[in-house]
Length: 254
Image 1: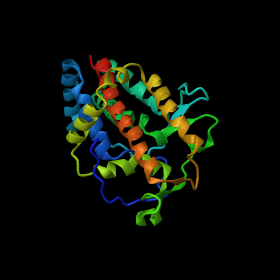
Image 2: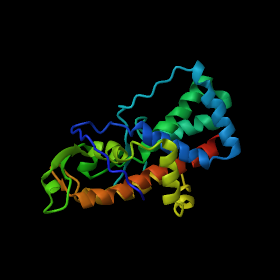
Image 3: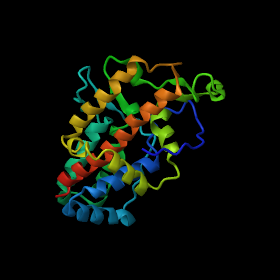
Image 4: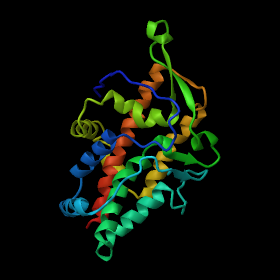
């Protein structure tokens, strides 16, 4: 996949409540719209048009997470849990004729904002793995051993790494181009990733996140090659979010 290597300003210490950037959220929605059914698309457009009469503001710093047990299963009933909130919003949309315009519009926006967060590695909290339940700061080394850039080091928080680093490489892209690139890159996986429920998707993300905590910890030193390899994990997460938004809305907006 083509990469745009842009100058990135690393900001350490931003809390784990940080949300994905607007670019990533918009790209995931563009991707989702490509795979929504005509019926779901029409109903989505109707609900989205309610914006002018509804006062809704998303708080990007909301303290929400995906809580998984030791077997990487989502069993939480906590209202702050991302999976629980997505399920409730989807259920409201399925029964939207019984609810006010404000409730319906809010439920749609909750899904659009929380589905990307379900696929944010830094949001995945796994029982028994302490590092998955707190933010920490590690060191990043820019270049290859022996190069001048190898001496250039920066610090970054785990949450910032997953929410803002990689999209910084593509900040010159439009959401449409980002989505187009993801769609091509992960075409073979699309059908598989669109199967299942939010609980299944949380388990999938737990499977992706757990191996990282064998090395991810405070003061870890990450070399450039490892950082580049992790971009594929990040891109796969954004693509999953887009494909799965389509699945959820196709089911909820029939």
